[in-house]
Image (tube, rainbow, N blue to C red; front, side, top):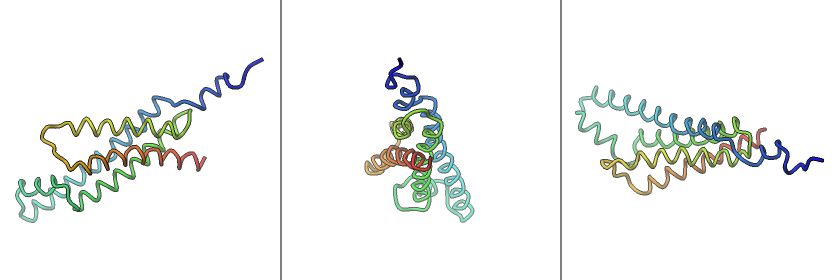
Length: 149
């Protein structure tokens, strides 16, 4: 007689799947990176076309203020954090919330590595906010996936 708590299918429902977490994290990393690059390039082209020097453009893009590129980056981070959890939960075979949490931690670890750059000096509130958005957004995306399935 087989105990249902030890059957292969019950094991799949309680854990998480690493490859799905990595795919979800890739979405959570690549989306904001692409959006940020696109936004920065368009902003640079527009500002240079209006007579600004590259130094002025870089100073504008490098400030942590309520600018259009920063707002677009924020919304991109939220959107792709949700997508990170959704994708991880969709491809994983375990708990959707576990999938989203692990994918969010993996994506946030990329942000931590990028912040170790010695030339970067962001406001600590932005750092904490960005990490929380990534983890909680990913869990929220996984939760939404679970609720819709």
